[in-house]
Every structure is written in structure tokens, then in C-alpha cells.
Image (cartoon, rainbow, N blue to C red; front, side, top):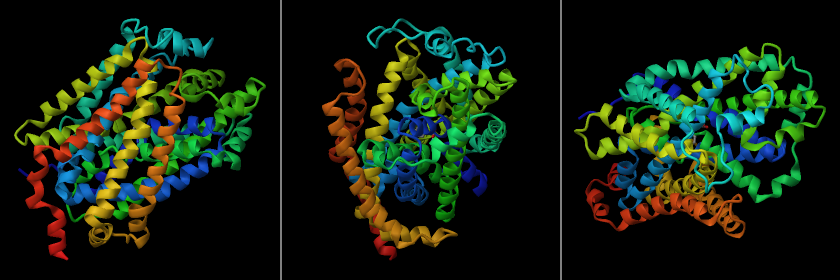
Length: 501
Ligand code: PHE
């Protein structure tokens, strides 16, 4: 059976950019920048982005394109012990999309209420009380929240119909879902330039706070955000690359994807901080005060600012429409690794059906987040999956690509097929920098979490978070020793590669 393919190179790049550019750029990046003091976050983020996340993106594209298989099979074929690293990526992407779709469901509810600007009187109560109907603590599930549940079902239907025909339907959808939100962001940017106070917002965004950069916490958050925003270390880019032809460009596509993603994050930062500057001006307080809102930024602070502008309904609708279109192509890319893995295992299975089951399963897991304690669970799972699983997967791929398979062999392959040349720096980054830095980050994160358990959650709830790390990592380790570990030896690519050379 021949593997499904993208209809053109441009379509692949659009799909990769669509996956990378998502809620992470417009919601997560600005609130982290705000939380860690604006410019203090920007520099570690840019460094981590260029020296770690982009090299990993190049690595993932190279592996997927060379091996022409889903994540588990690709990595296992490179070395039998590494299939579990692929599985870790697949499970993590699945866990993320289960809550990512819920955040999109909130956006949908906000979009529907935009023209009425229903939150104008009290945005905080509107978000926590009306939309989330949040319970007092994580122990009180409080039953399902009807509107969020229905919105989530609608989001999953939308995701399903974007991907049901594999790369073909994805290719058609991204022609719209990539340019449209960027254009809307442009409109919001122009609007924000006319808001009083925008300059104060920009100042905070761009002024470095050097002392904050000594904090390992800022670096861990910056590195994790760099991976997340580029969609690397979740096996997504590897899966997307497996639908390319083995002789297509890798380096240029990676840089186009990375630079577009970075540009959009930075651009979104300008819009968000201009609006925050305006908020501070309206409330006669400092920008630092209004930015310290954390994850509530997109659903409390921003809607409040929108409600204060002239034409609040129109700009609110534009904003939430933008978030939805930004999110949808990232959401379906997060489902692809699981679909590719299952179709690899059962080549005869109908892909429309596999896609349907995966979407249904993710909707099922997402039900937890539609309870009235959903936000608490979402916060915990996001913390653990993003700070541990992504870093472990990146570490596993760097060890496999850099040491077991050989960075230089991979670099030769990349340079053979690519329009742009990748220098020796890349091999050094994959072999040394990425593994060393990631190990340090992992150790710091672990010691922080063990010393002060995350949030104010009870131990049973945090153990759920730990389980989302320990179970997939355990499965991955089990695969090293499990029966399948020996199967792929004969067609190990490392050997064929050596023979080629
Ligand atoms: N990169 C996308 C974003 O920034 C999607 C994504 C989210 C990918 C989470 C991986 C993990 O929103």
C-alpha cells in the first residue's frame, strides 16, 4: 500500500505552520511573557527556540520523511529500543488534544456571545461563573457543564471533518485556516495602534529584566513553550513529514515553519501587550498589574479590554474567531500521530474510521474537563505533560538521532535532499546542547515539583498528573524489553545507512 501524500510542498509547509501556530502563540506565549516580566521571558524564549526547538524540528522532519512511517515504527526502525519514545509522543499529543479542544470549546462559547458582549459587566465572574461554572475545589466534580459539553462535541465534529480524508482534506483546510487568523491578527494589530496606553504595554513587553533570567524556572518555561509552539516533541511534525516524499527539502521547510511561528508569536505579543497597556490606562494602574493574570488572559483580561473599545461586539467576535481558526489546525495535527500509529499497526483499517475512533476517544477523555472541576484537571495535566513528556520525548529523539543513528549521517541525508544547507552546528546541537540542557531542565523541574507540589492541589489529584508521565514512560520502557523490540532489527535503517555510506 502506498503511503498517502501531501498534494504539494506548499501544502505541507502550510500544514506545518498551521500546526505550529495555535493557541500557544496568542494565548500561552503572551501570558507567560506577562507572568515572567515581559522582556525577561523573551530572551530565554528566543534562545531556546533557535538553538533547541528548531534543531529538533529539523530532526523530526528528517526522521519522518526518511522513514515514511508513523512515530512508533519510524523510531523503532532506527533502533529497536526507541519505539517507546515514539509512543510517548503519540500519547502526549493525545492527552494534549483532549484539553486543547476544551479550550477551543470555551472560545466557541465566547464567539457565540460576542455580539452581545455578554461579559462586559464582570468578565471574571463571566468566565469562572457563567462559562466554566467552576466548583470550589478539584474534589467537587459538580456534574457536567452542559454548554461546554455541547460546544466540545461541536469542536470534535469540526476536527473530524478536517482530517477524515487524511493529508488530502487537511491540505484543503489549511489553505483557509492558516491565512485567515493571521489576517485577523493584522486587523487587531492596526486597531491596537490607536489605543491610548499601547506604548506602555509595548515597553513592558520589550524591556529585559536581566535578574529574572537567572531563574531556572524562567528557562524551563521558555524551553517548554518553544517546543510546544513549534509542535515538536509530540511526534506531530514527524507524522506530517512521513506524508512527504523521501527526497523533498527539509532544511528550508523547517526554517520557514520556525520563523513564521516565531514571527506570529512576537506579533501576537505586540497586539496583546498593546491591549494590556490600554487596560492599564483605563483602569489607571500599571501594565505589570494587568498582565499578571496568567491563563485567564484570553478569557478575562482580553475580553474585558475588548468590551471597553468602540465596536466591542465586532472586535470580540474577530478575536474569538481568530482563536478558533488558529486552534483548529493545531488540534487536528495533535490527533494525527495517533491515527498514523494505528494505521501503521493495521494497514487494512479504513483511515476515516480510525480517525473517527481517535476523535471519539479524545472527546471521551475531554469529558473530564467539561465537569465543573474541569479547569483544575486541565491545569494539572497541562503542567505535567508539557513539562515532562515533551522534554523526555525530545531527549529520546536527540539521543537516538545524535548518538545511536548518528547526527552526521542524518545531516548528510538532510543536505542531500534540502534546498538549504545545514551546518555542523546542527549536529553539535543535537548531540550535546539539546541533551545536556534538557537533562538540566528536567532535573530542575523534578526537584521543584518534589519540593513544592504543583498548585494547591491534593495529593490524589497530583498523582493523576504524575500518572500521565509515568504510565507512557513506563510503556515506552516496556517496549524496549518487550517482544516487539527484536522484530525490526533486520530492516534497521542504521545498518542500511552505514552500507550506503
Ligand atoms: N503548536 C500549537 C500551539 O502552539 C499546538 C500544540 C499545542 C502542539 C500543544 C503541541 C502541544 O498551540
